[in-house]
Image 1 (cartoon, one colour):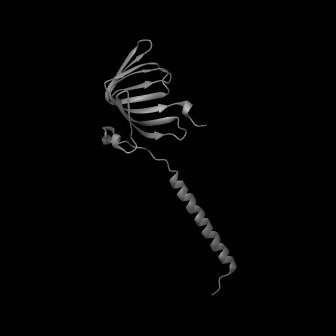
Image 2 (tube, rainbow, N blue to C red):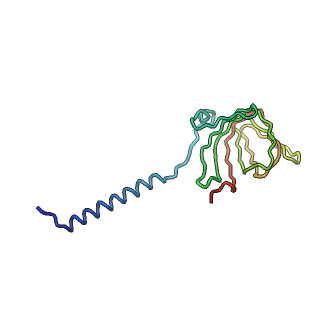
Image 3 (cartoon, helix red, strand yellow):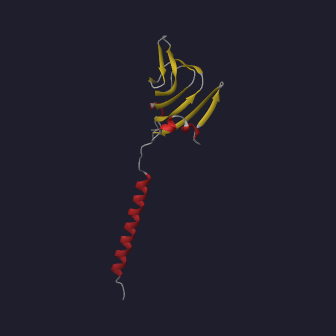
Length: 153
């Protein structure tokens, strides 16, 4: 039995359409945006053992940073951070930062002499441009930063 040429064209069109839909479906799956979870064990320290952990030592202070999310425009970021003892003078803080202290704490003294002390289980927001002293015996924090200057245009 011979197939009419119009059936072949119809079959070819159907195959092409199916192939195009498959490509769109695969592409759509690749672009699915999903929530990012940090588990209790990770929050309590196991996250700092990940391969993407950034370990640094500066002026005798060991720190570890884990970035859990960076927005596509690079202006917004979340993560966890660990630091040992530190007494740091900050001038013109480079971004807006929300800090939730999981352990330890810090004392922030603004240039006008006002003092904010934050303990484990408490949070503080440091506005971009803040100047003062950040003093700690060590801490672990969960952070959220936003810097409009980092936004890719």
